[in-house]
Image (tube, rainbow, N blue to C red):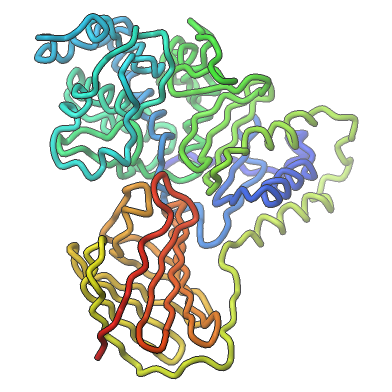
Amino acid sequence: MKELLERVRPWQEKVDPEHIIDFLNACEKTGLEIHGIMIAVHDRVIFEAYSAPYNGQTPHIMHSFTKTLTNTAVGLAFADGLLQLDDPLLKYFPEQAQGANGYLQKCTLRDLLTMRNGQERSIGGNEWRPLKTSWKEAYFQVPFDKEPGKTFMYSSGNSYILSYIVQQVEGKTAQELFQERVGRKIGVGDFPWMKSPEGVCSGGNGAELTVEDMLRIGLLYLHKGNWRGEQLLPAEWVDYAFGFRDSLPSFEGKQYNFHWERKDGLDIWAAKGMFDQICGVIPKYDMVFAMTAADESYQAEELFQREILDRMGSPRKEPVSQGETAMETILREKGLRLSLLDQDHSVRDHVELPDTLVFEPEENPDGIWRIRLEFGEKTFRFGMEDGRGTHEILHGMDHWIQGTTSMTGAYLHHQYEKKDLQVWAEAHWQDARTLLLKWRYPGMPFFDQVKISFQERQVLIDRWVNMNSQDTCRPTLVLKKWR
């Protein structure tokens, strides 16, 4: 049974609740969509909130925050004496030595950790997730054309190779090593972590964690690898990870070390993932915050610094009252009211349709060959058949309902796709001939919308997403035959 983190009021840790309110308001004003957030000072949680349908129990797909798990696993193998930072990469892949140029021969594990391996281009998780062949071979097919250790170039391929090496030297996956030696001891529950066709943890992305899991990992790094008196990760390794030891020059306004980075002028050491999932460690105030979000502008760090950290220790005095202050009540209520399940209402007059419609779409790039629409009294069911099978989502008409789906979506979801994805769905008539569907996923940052336009001689379906590493919309699906 994991040890619970103590929950206290902000003023008990000398944090003005108004500053947290201002941070939340600033996020809203700038379009930063918070899904979940926790803030801890001196190991005590002073604020926690989730925007419905997100919650504290449903694991969230981690993008590059996953690299922190890989970094930790490498640190454990380092502690075991099974690898060294300046080991040549080819020591672990001798089969690649034949014909290797001078750049590849010089590349070290340190170069992979610091994203300075000298390859021609970066490798993203969305490139490899659909790949059914060897990811290791795909990595070495990208030429090494620069001096290793010199040029920063972010690449998830490096993290996969590190995960591969950990499994090679420890005889267990990075996930197994992390959980046995660190995760379970700090209170991180067993979690899924995507594996390659070779059975190796993906390294750079694909783990699924809660916001509290992220926070606990941040607390471990805040305390230099020590958890309740037990040294789980060498303090030396944390110093490397944060750049306290062998620090690297800043590149484009930030210093990137072992999967932790610090932007110039900020007090925050951050482990981050796409769309602004972040765990921020602030040693100056013995503070950690963790957040999942949907934000393409990556503003969380600057807003947290400006609204909270820059105002720490301001002249405002802590209230004498031992009870909850008025401002703390406002903060608590604001946190409880966070929601992304907006309320829409159908127009009164709209086209009358049969209870069930089945369409055969025109040829399309997504390989969709059947669409089925079912209208209930207070529900709407959308069905789609493609090469993966039959997929359905049940919606509430003018209200949200929860369910699961296998709906194809990798092309809009950074190439993530699950067979049993949690989804909240709502449908409403936007106008007389347009039905709008909304899909929110508690385990992902993506928000899909589908517009079904019932025209005189055809039906058109458009689908788009709030953000993606690739296209954010699909080609219009044209439906002409129905029965």
